[in-house]
Length: 187
Image 1 (tube, rainbow, N blue to C red):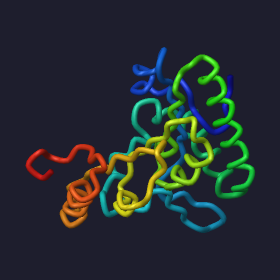
Image 2 (image 1 turned 90 degrees about the horizontal axis):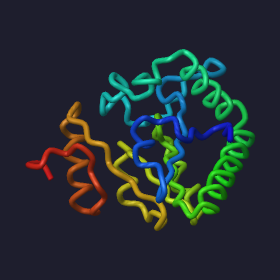
Image 3 (image 1 turned 60 degrees about the horizontal axis):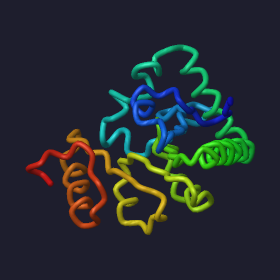
Image 4 (image 1 turned 90 degrees about the vertical axis):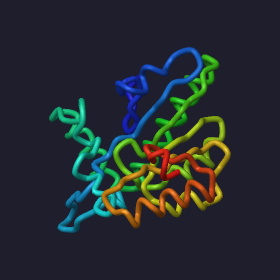
């Protein structure tokens, strides 16, 4: 099955966990400083503060290949030029993916922020309660939000800005949200 927006079975890390219990679908977009109609769009609000744009997964592994870059660019341009068509295609992908997984008694897992930190997963997870959504985020305020039961976030830690790093640790302690890569002495 070909999906327009989601990638299924093409991530070296998640494919290891795909099988009889879970299968993961991921959306990859161009995250940082995308120029569209003369305006710069940033789909990762904390990229400069956390300095994660310097080592972004966008160009890691298969993401460095020209065909992969062009696919991510195409999806991002669709989102920016025609959000209705983009979300229609995304919802169709999720419906198809969810239906196939559930038919085989497999839990559908969906990560919408594969290479962006747009934050639309919270809203979308509410529309598809039979799927498990998850994201890594550097947007601290999401840890304090009322998240749907089928949506899990991990705060992504960075020591590039120590004020930001301290706020991540505080959010993890206060909310119980998982904090990825937080040094043990900090948590």
